[in-house]
Image (cartoon, rainbow, N blue to C red; front, side, top):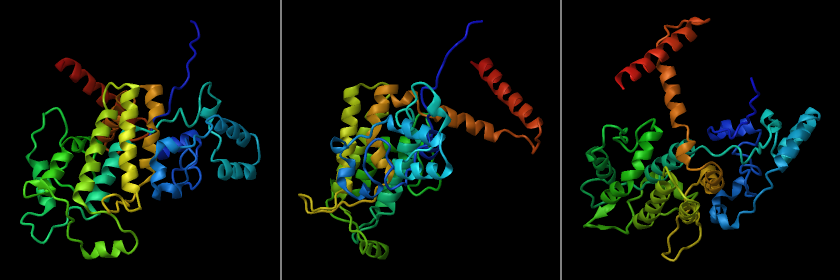
Length: 344
């Protein structure tokens, strides 16, 4: 038998697991929250944090350098390297061709659907008061929004979006499908007298308290224009096939939307967006490199693995352990595979 030489192409997992695997600093680190550029965590309140044309890239090979320095030194020096240079030793660093920041792409399912889209729906729209009723509203905007969610007809082969905007635990499939009808649902929710109203919802007592710390836009038209570009950009970037031009175009659209959301100065319309942004909004702008290196995100997201993890978690093992559990899982797995093959 001849020897086969192989290496690991990437480590594809959610952000906390990815940082631990690669030995990089956590995504809440002030100086090292982004391993791709020199922006600091505190810069998330600035629109420049989302302008990828102004990013100052880090040297990716420096992480390998400090990883090996940390590996062959004292514990005190390792702690200092972790703080000063944002790197700990990882066994992956010994692999040929492995570069911690470039070989640990940001996993699309968790980053986009479970973080960005979820934050948009709950953090910006719901908790931000964008579904509050106006004084002259007969049907509240939230009720009109959920009417579209419940009235939409979906093919039997896809999962359904949530029936309520404030549903508890939303799955990535639900949030991904939500993007498809979100512009239509928002237009119906905010539509007054057959046109998109440029007014603001009536603020609540909680909104007045929040406004003491941060003033942000409640203008329907500004939000709708931004969300329309946001949905279009994610549809472009999430396609099964994509060119480098399309990837750059989608990221340009996201960058413009995020800069507008983070803008804290007076804009041309004399409105303040000034929305709360999480680290994922900055990190997704860096997606041009993994798309160029590894191809469309459809080919390396973790939907299949999460689905099979769910199947394993639902197997009935009656509390048995010590070898019986493994045999039960294997029998259940092969039973499912054989039934699928028989039906097919």
